[in-house]
Image (cartoon, rainbow, N blue to C red):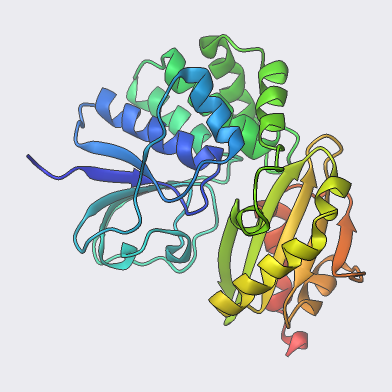
Length: 314
């Protein structure tokens, strides 16, 4: 029996990563490609658990590494630092992503579908359409959930007209009322009390690098920033452990209020002044409030990237 082609998103998976992996497998099978299998690179957050429970689906299998030559398909990421151990020697067949392209190189040509949409599942929705494949309720719920998650119910600045159109059509197929289902799903993801501080700072953390500056931007969603800040001391201990472990220059924990669309950032590391310059703020007790900021991809990362690249910092 031929080895399966593994489909997966990034480490510390969010709802788009898990749902897009599952949807990509469904899409491939409907397109006559039966050798693919969705897997995951980390534990599910409570928001994603809500989606799978709603559908009565099992979580994809957890993998820790891939062997040399393993055929893989990447969704919702491309940077090797965010991918599985062994990715450098895997055979990457295709990528479907909505992030920047960085630190990515392959030995052979591949299919690469990248669009600046709010969600990877919006790209997969278009692939269903382009291939003339039927979208059934299960994949409609998965894709709708991913779009709701990544765009914060279409309120994030990453939201595009393509995301809005896709969600409108998917909601009809899924037979869900977007705002009601979406708020229940998002609120499920804000229940953080069961997580240790270490789990919280790694729940949705992206490892990044720019001009030899290594940094992490982690994000947690909440309905009460102050409730999360009550745990600041233990969160900072966990962040410092990650800084030492990974040799980081900066660790940013973004605590995002999904109701008011604001973020409090907690910042540690020897280069934390980069974050202050990036957002024209002064950190007080290692924290700063960023009004109207909700998106790591479109607001947090670009500002930090641009500031690191500013020669005046040298």
